Image (cartoon, rainbow over all chains, first blue to last red; front, side, top):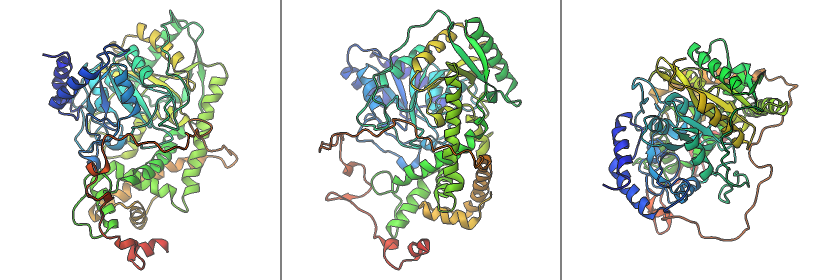
Length: 455
Length: 108
């Protein structure tokens, strides 16, 4: 029996969720090696953290949930991983995700779907569904995921855990496999705001290896305030549409009353361009993906199908065999919206719409609002297979999360109640680089909210 | 805004993506559905002349221009499907050579 055996046992017990891609025997030996090399103290000493399989690690393969990277071992590790280890954390394996982080249910993994920790008929959300499911099942206290349009917050809300998407530029993306480079950020999951915040603090800060990472010190963790007096919290009406799930609405209404009871001033606000966020995202993200994923061609890494007669046939066969259905759709949409004759109608217009969406947030924050409160998802966790037939229905699962990605803002989800036993998340969105204020409010709210109570 | 089968075949060639004949009709339907949905942004009034949005630092920071070792745990020979004498091996260039079929076709 070694110090790391209990976490391996918990991960083995969670095997039916199909959330971890690394075999537990491999986790066991990797953890023993890391524990021997780890600093004896540190803010995260001994904390096991699982990592989404699109973040490069030296200990484990990095497949991005794709056949095109089957068996791939990175020759370097992500800055976030190096920092976790320096803080004393132990990397406890790689988690399942939608292929190249494209999806909202973890059903688009080439290695099979992951299961919701409470109801196996349902999805854990996505794309970082494996990380969310393992934290939700209590196998690990924290996990890393990545966000391009909500891939940490949406599964965190579904699995009843805390999920944080930091400001674009807060955390180095060195070693995060690129999907949409103007949107991608590494995010964190935690059982509590404290666990998630501590991990975020450890991985944040300047990095000369990532030119998009801001030249800032690591995030300082705030003290927990007594109450929310002095906070002005905006409730954007566009996030409470008439077809919002009634259970989600009840949980949010209850939380808004709680925010007032805690002393916050609650104000109705409007973010008028919100309805265009998903269409804007599904032009910009595929455009960037089609460009980023051009590197997977069967030449430098990954498996290569045999028998290609020339190099172009090699590219086409490698990509045709290696990419799954959703990645193929996005590569094709991205290529289309960037092609001659369509660039102005789609891509340029989407870039302008993105500006207007970002301006909506600035207008609200400039008028004295400190934070916004919204539902994290429009529904509780949905059933597996329910949205696979219609890509647009799947895209709409991110309708309340994608705006913070488009505007580059920090946002957080925490559990605020249950609907028929299934978790519901509430979201806080803050101004850029004010994660500390967002965490203060989350700490206070977490102390009073009843996450297990039916809404 | 729907997309035709011929357009899907064309963008698949541009994206260097082999698409099975049998999968094409379904793909045409799905891509049309997505493009019809995202076409909502056409509602953006011509008078709203917002500048494109760029997240991240306002200016690119440069590192000193000095040669430093690449911090890799191992070299490309461990990753590449085919590698010899410091080179990645690929089949003949074929379609990229002058006069070949679809290279010329896409230039047209």
